[in-house]
Length: 215
Image (tube, rainbow, N blue to C red):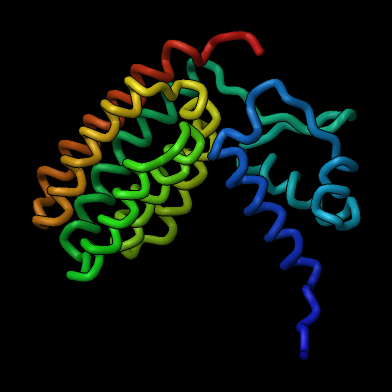
């Protein structure tokens, strides 16, 4: 069996993407400190690609580094409001564009994700499927730069979404996502914009209550 050598840059990218996913899913919460040595042991690699991955996350504003290690970069209320202001501008528009451009088979694929979201066993699984649901829709806008910007914004608020999850809040979210799905299914671009905004409003109201808690 032939195995291709993993290049250094590829290793850094793998670690970067994995850490970003863990942050979005709420596996890394505000206030928790990780050392580069601990992470290098967990990934089974040297410290160098781990440090490079963390430096990239720091440039994106997702983590902050200090002498002891790194932490998720907790948001101030001002940063939180700015992120949601930008999301309100970008996400309804990208959903509108995606809704118009989506192929017929996309409806069935989104329905599978939505079903898995409905059956999520816990808030971590729910938030993971929630992100997958949104980004599956947004992917059909064919706007990779815009999609990357939105992805970075989600990484900044991911842990807070996990912290704000409850059965009641997930139930409200599912009702909104049902409306988003139906708009996507019908290619109703104006309706999907309206429901994405409603989803953002719910998310904002839930996270606003916890964003300034000390960690």
